[in-house]
Image 1 (spheres, rainbow over the protein chains, first blue to last red):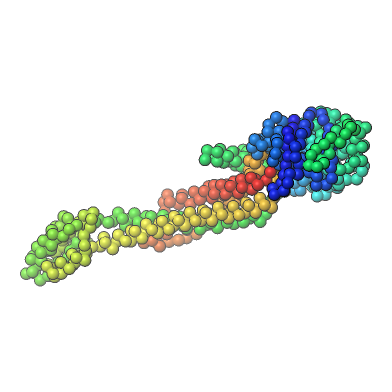
Image 2 (image 1 turned 120 degrees about the vertical axis):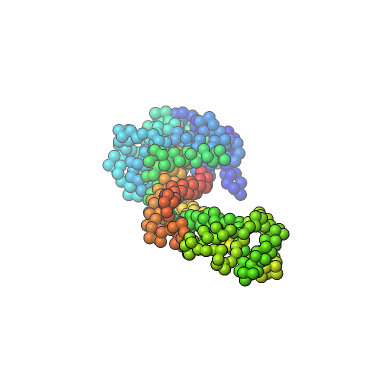
Amino acid sequence: MIDFHSAGYGYAGGRPLLTDIGLSLAPGSFHFLTGPSGAGKTTLLKLCYGELVPTEGSVSLFGAALAGMDRDAVARARRRIGIVHQDCQFLDHLPVAENVVLPLTVAGQPVPEQDLADLLAWVGLSDRAGALPPSLSGGERQRAALARAVITAPDVILADEPTGNVDWEMSLRLLGLLVELNRMGKAVLIATHDMNLIRTAKGQVAARVLRIRDRQVQAAGAEL
Amino acid sequence: MTGVLVRLRAVARGALGGGDPAAGRVVPPTGFTARLTLFTAAAMSFLAVFALALALAAGQLAERWEGALTDSATIRISAPVDQIEAQLQAVLQVLETTPGVTGAQEIPDAEMQRLLAPWFGSNLPVDRLPLPRLVAFSETGAGYDSEGLRLRLAAEAPGAMLDDHDRWRRPLVTAAKRLRLVASVALVLIGATLAAMVTLAAQAALAANGQVIRVLRLVGAEDRFISAAFVRRFTLRALAGSAAGTALGLAAAALLPGGTVEAGLLSGLGFAGWTWLWPFVLVPVSAAVAYLATAAAAARTLRRTP
């Protein structure tokens, strides 16, 4: 679904941050992406959803080369990718429920009320549907972001440090939700430097751990 | 060009058609910038009503004066009775040999009587009164040298006086036409000012909502959806502001002195008859200007958002 072919990226004026990346996110796969801060984890995720275009090699989204896609095509591809950011990024003037259904709203799709209610119950936010995002706790924001990421039943879930701002208990709860999505056939890629989270996932899912080292993505070894 | 039109049509469908009302809600209230657009559209439309009135009045004046131009002139001969016939012949001879002059002839007594009838009645004994004699002539397209003709008349017929009234009226026609042009340019400038102000307001709103735009792109919004949210808002504000400004302008114009066909420029600076309909064109035009300005500003901003 998302494929890197000798892809790399360098910000203007600097040497490439990532180079010669070969990666494929297949249906039902579960990947962790680790590496020190500044190694390029977020940059790699941005390449996955087309916010950045590779400066070397190529990245394809659902069979189409990212470099050849126009802005609308990228937007449509993003509807098949659920993205959870560390800082969540909500529309603060809209209540949680409207933020969660935002991917449907922008796609002009109807909002199934029962599905929304079930989804909010699944992430434990049924009683916070009418709250505005600034009033949510860190954990609630992450769960709302996860609900928004999956409302369109995307093929791929990308999460950038999803447990960075929450306590361990909430981290486990978020991990459980992502594992559950993976069991439904979604490809999941989580960028994190939380090794405890990766070890905890060991008993729940067959995940591959990728590590960014020397500007390249390397397999971290055995499957967890 | 075709691509631009296709894109504009797409934005139009989203912005003002049945489109997508949800687009409006995803952008938070734009407060100051929306009020700025409302006020600017109202003020510009108010001014545009008067620029329009000036353009129409100047245009009507130019047409009226131009219609009265006949390319003709007269020579009045006032001389003692024993000399008047000789001077008349001399004038006709001078006119015959003057380049640019054609159709010179003496105005007959019957015509003189008709001209004087409003003042002296129809029984005036023209043939027994020491009235001046009149010679009318036309000028060709190339025109004639009026100063040279005056000098020759002074030498050949001292009692002859050239009255080339059309000559001083023609510059007035030109002036009226230029006034109409100035008023038209003023209308264009008012439209451009409205576009500039709406662009500034829209850009301010777009800049203030950079985070909103990023989130919308992140969840898969196409540019036309995001653009429609802003275009709808600013177009409707401009429409409302322009309607209010135009209504006020029309009310003020109604208080101006009414114009008549014979009236001069200032007394005719208003609307009459079907010309009252013209100011209503300003409202959709203002909305269209706001629509295009906002769409262009949104397109520029969105191009910079990944």
